[in-house]
Image (cartoon, rainbow, N blue to C red; front, side, top):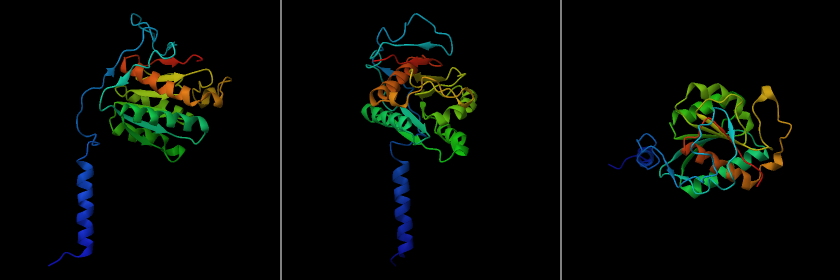
Length: 223
């Protein structure tokens, strides 16, 4: 006897689910620890130094350009805000991920009350790196990151006022937002979030993380 249409639909749906679970995108499977492919330039940061936690260093422009993550690098982008700077950062992260074949997933909290739960959803995925884009997430990140020291975070276009050793930030004179309690920096300039600078921010930040220069602020000089 032929199965009824609802039964056929159920079987088809099950087939789709099995296909999805068996794909290469299943993050429940173990994978090798990520590493840096390529070498940072000698003027990125002095390899003989041990920078103080929360300190800032200014790499020479382009000194990070030869570094990319190893195959299978898992990144979650958490983003909030519809302002032009945030959109520029998100675009840069996605273009970097496409270019470097990074396994990227995105979490977009739907309201301020969802900011911390959204970061928690990113944590639950157990990625190699969580990237944050958008000033609205700075205060929620300050609340969450200190309780998950084994999870690397990268903040692009802003920074935490008191980051722990697992939080790296990339900033420049037109960015520098550090949370509502400190207010917007007097040098903040939305027009400074150019495509070129945002692209440099994600690449320089990832180069720092992959080379164990975490818990620092990467300051992008004018270029």
